[in-house]
Image (tube, rainbow, N blue to C red; front, side, top):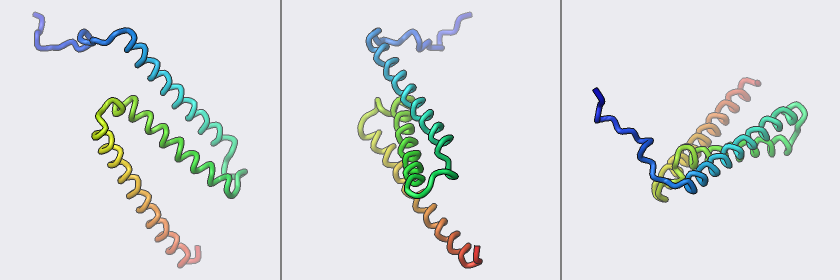
Length: 125
């Protein structure tokens, strides 16, 4: 007995071959970009460790990691989680919510780091 309440969604795609090629090209671009960024992070992590990098160079490397991670997160969310295809208002609500969470996390980390640093200096550590 064949069920008639199951919908086969793969039979209902109505896009042309040109649209499919454009989507595949975008996915390949994002995949190669994310791979290149990851390879760059790994290479920098291997050759520029904390032991042989001092001062401003180490700070630059840390901020480079933060920036590259934000770029990777942007492309993952916009492409693979399909947020790039949504309306502008929804994008702004999602991104502003994450921005508020990130700012709150940074404030908590700074506050707790200062408290721990103060406690350690009090005990002479």
